[in-house]
Amino acid sequence: MTETDNKTAHKGWINRPARPVGIVGYGAYVPRYRLPNTEVSRVWLGEPLPGPIKEKAVAGIDEDVITMSIEAARNALARAAIDPQLLRAVWVGSESHPYAVKPSGTIVAEAIGASEHIQAADWEFACKAGTEAMVAAMGLVGSHMADYALAIGMDTAQGKPGDALEYTASSGGAAFVIGPGEEALASIDAHYSFVTDTPDFWRRAHQKYPEHGQRFTGEPAYFNHILSAAQTLMESTGFSPQDFKYAIFHQPNEKFPARVGKQLGFKPEQIKDGLLSPVIGNTYAGAALIGLTAVLDIAEPGDRIFVTSYGSGAGSDAFVLTAQSALLERRGAALSTQAYIARRTEIDYATYARFRGKIAMR
Image (cartoon, rainbow, N blue to C red):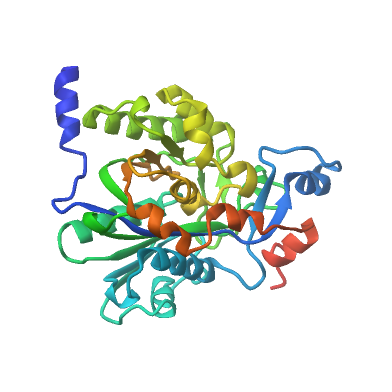
């Protein structure tokens, strides 16, 4: 296959719904508690050394994926300015659903006042469970099966005590109401998914903490998937990095998004406004999505936004979005992402261990 043929084939893989769709409401949630990286190293290494990020957000003792999803969903609905009864789907993507059998989606749907006549489901697709739910919502709305669908990416910290993941595995996420393009705060202009079974971390059934592949997490996992998804989408749509005001990539740490952005040709100033890892850590299913909420908080009409998620053994979803004029009118209807980050209460390791159930009593 020639390069021209390959690009033509790629165009058939790009998702553009028959009916224009977009984000009509968005909302973030970040818990107020913060565990500094220096506190993790103090306990496990004997001295407070700087880690891969500054600190991470930690869910409180009374918080989980469900409670945080409800908060983010309410923010998204406030910006969407719609009755929750109009929703036709509530989908919650996470790696840390609080129940092994009982679903999170039904609880969230009922708590936000959605109708009983609705689709609801939990998504588990590693760190891109949230963007996978968004793609499904695009299909539901784009096919006229619904006018509005809610997609959520939310997680809690799961790092093993003393493990490298404990420095970055954090809590929080985002929710998005997907609806008709004419009502969009940001239109979703194109989407592409790249999927392979290349894991960099995993957790088997009944295993409390995930294991990870050490250096394997970068190559061929994170970088190969994000580069493949991002390059294919840009080639197929005819866009280049210079066409975007902002670029957001999955954020396991501070270095990876900056490096992959540079490899793709993006400038540091295009990435920094969506880069929250140094402050709140890796929120897994919400990692790219919470960065998108931060960008939507500051974007101007006409700004084009590039987003690429990543999930271990799952792949990457890439999106092209364009901010619309309605964004200026409605983003003030809910708390901004930066406002959530500013609500900061520092905790020590013992409090973190109690909040996250690190000490198993039974």
